[in-house]
Image 1 (cartoon, helix red, strand yellow):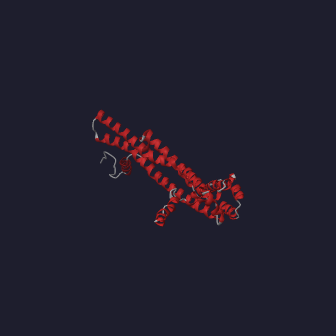
Image 2 (cartoon, one colour):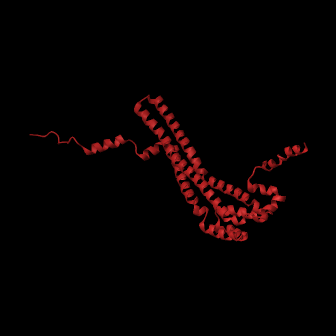
Image 3 (cartoon, one colour):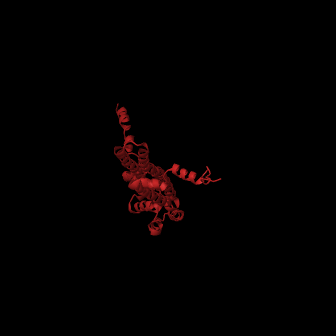
Length: 273
């Protein structure tokens, strides 16, 4: 008896593994390569966004914006109305922070102006707005990346669809070729959305974090500078001869002081009659 061919089992694991690899399609690296230049630009933007997010998350922290040791030192100086000593603390380079920059502006106004105690809060608000705007500018790049990443993805998709229609014009509407071209075209849109969604989430979180810590800094400064607020006769003196300097402190509208002068007119008319 002769055997014409060697025995081959019906179940071949290697054939199944090869078939499984074919069914799974392209690997992640191959898909990224199919994105072309646009895909690589989106990947570069994702790395930049990640770096900026880490830098801002480290920088925008209470211990950096409102250092506890500076709060204690400045609070001790201001409790005794030692404005010169508090200014010296704020001006040291090693003490540079959100808190010291804002407080230094107010203390400078407090010292230089004849009505410094009444302009102090105004100066604090102006300096605080400037510092908050500066922190906002730190996060603008993240917002920009989150905005342009989907548009770059759409650009890559449009380029890919142009190639798909070129395939149709050259070889006809063959489903297998057309599906491959469309898949390559849509990969850039997917990449753009994968970058934009987390980037915009981090951007919004950082903006809210800035607002929260700015409000915390404002409350801290207000608590530290209670001793500098005018009281008693000090508050009455500028009100008599410098009503314009006192107005910003009370934050009343410019037309507010004119209202009390209106009622005397009718009463004078009745008295004459």
